[in-house]
Image (cartoon, chains in turn orange, green, red):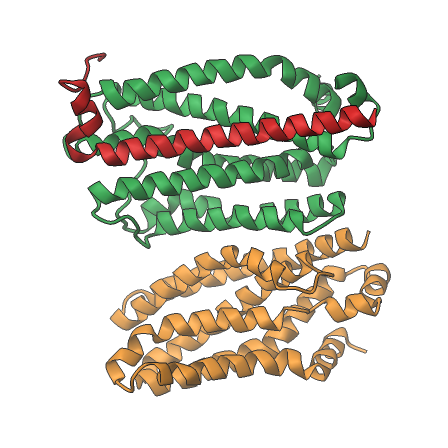
Length: 215
Length: 243
Length: 55
């Protein structure tokens, strides 16, 4: 069977892992207007920062125990021994996670930003940004959860959080660029460049880290 | 010859004996230079035209922030050597440097924020340089906590060195943040390529304090790596001769 | 180059109102360095003692 499809089936079975982060994201987004008085002007001010931070948190939740089940039933060791392309398998796994969690979240981010800013152009431009940043966050947190593999705690995610912070800085800058209508593409390309490095590097690093765990 | 030298020096035993010989000279020499250039800088340089007397913090702030980044770079080099050539000493160095790097980053942050009160009118500003230095500080704390969460030293070393290498992307961001984003923080006064944008009477004590601080921190690294060697190699027979 | 920048010793401590900042940084830095050195020295002694006892 195709490994990509297999990974999809595996993730689909674990409802908690893919539905949980999306629900957390939606709940934060719904809870946000309730905490600010229903005044249009105040709502817009902190919305985008909250959007990025809740994306970061939901990605952290999604990858919390990405390898834990495979590690516990011993299939991780078998995969490591049997297949010669362990990094490619990890890349596929991350892609499936992104397709199941990252894309819905970026669609919802479009919906919520439209409902709050009432500005179609801004909300449309937010979508590619959120797609890119969810993929970057996923990759980084997969690395983090590989570091603290059998601990099953959020330690790894907390450790890799500082690496994700420069991405947040770029995101904040790009939102300002969108709102003022200036060179938005520059930031998008910066994120895309970062993503292309991360996509190629992270699977190899993660495979080495897991090998170090299982030795 | 170089390869042979590295292999010989990289064994914890020779490292310990060689380092013990030079430790005292480095310590007293750098202490002398540091105190001398601090006194020179704090009391004997002319007042800055714009910043007044508060510019004298430069003699404490710049060495600390310079070292906070270069210690991380040294850690990255050590982790690459550990992962490629399996040099045990490099692994000891990584975890020996981490707390000291955290300390220097803390010193850089504290001295910078105290310097900010008279010159910027605020002790904290969320601009690129300061925020990325704070991120570096959190990175150091994360490295220490990761290493402490494993009881198996060898596994902890491997994971730690991977984390150090991945986290190295922060260093160029910190280094270039002053040029890339418009911030309150001034750009570097001294660079290798250009003429320094600072008067010689202020420059010489700065260079002296940098050398002195570097030497002192180097001594700290030596002591803490000694501690690591004692911790890890306590079962080896040569330790007995040393003690 | 080696001229005393202040008129008196009191002025050197006061530094036109900036002395508080400068000297507090000096104190914090020296305190941290002394603490670090003494911490590692004490730890090193402890370990040496432990090693002595085992042999």
